Length: 320
Ligand code: A3D
Image 1: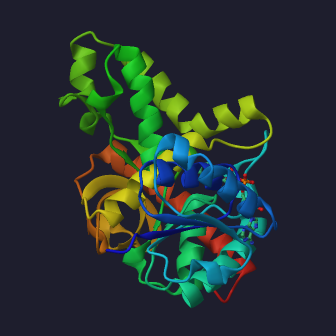
Image 2 (image 1 turned 30 degrees about the vertical axis):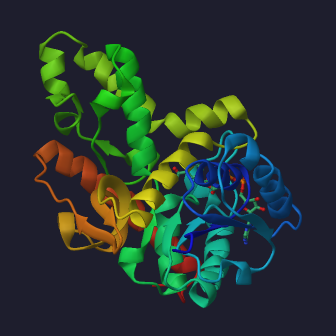
């Protein structure tokens, strides 16, 4: 059986880390594409030279033309610009929307059968634009945000409780970052929901609220420390989990930005919800009942995403 092919559009901080993780996990051959000539080629060669030491077999190549994506099974998009201190994700719209239009056309031409994972910010609007520009089926185009947001939440909770990160699960809904909606009653330590853990004295409501706020601000915390760009290790690991579930038909239930068609009362836009990812792409959206407070927070998040999409439509009326 031929190896799978993974196309990475954008060979920056996240792109390089994606290539390394895809190699280490032997998910398939990797093509790194970027508009800056030399960078994808250099990173691919450097990574390939690590393969004998790490013991993985994968062909890693760099390219400056979309043709290199031909026949890709998975395409992960990080092309565009990241934010710098003082910028919000939404400040990136002008630049990154144009990039999504180019990338969408490239994918439509050379990799129309791929499962596409968008990481470029502002995520929920850029994945919508990428889907529009590519014309691919909505179940084959998704955004990575929830896996990262919930991973940050899980990490902070595991630290607070002094337990393994593996035994902490988290359920998040909504847009990426500032408007994400964590659902404590569906987030657990080994199946015990967070509100029960508060009752059991494992933590206080106040501490839990602080952790939720730190999770929402998780991206900004890293931007503030790095000063030259944004997080890349955890975002790359999160997208690789999604790619692996598709390539191996694992049917993992992961929080992703998915195209909704009426679920949660939302139609025609991308919002973060838990979904089953398997060989067909997004195979099922997990729709739970929300209480009034959760619904209000979710609606606020959806409103923010709609605002960004309207801004995209104003800049690029050909989309949508
Ligand atoms: P960076 O290291 O700057 O890499 C971006 C790469 O895109 C650069 O190498 C550019 O040369 C390349 N590029 C720019 N325009 C094009 C184009 N038209 N075609 C192909 N390549 C192009 O950034 P990064 O890797 O740190 O971040 C990439 C994106 O991910 C940014 O938009 C970030 O804001 C975003 N991001 C999202 C999350 C989420 O959780 C959603 C987390 C972290 C970063």
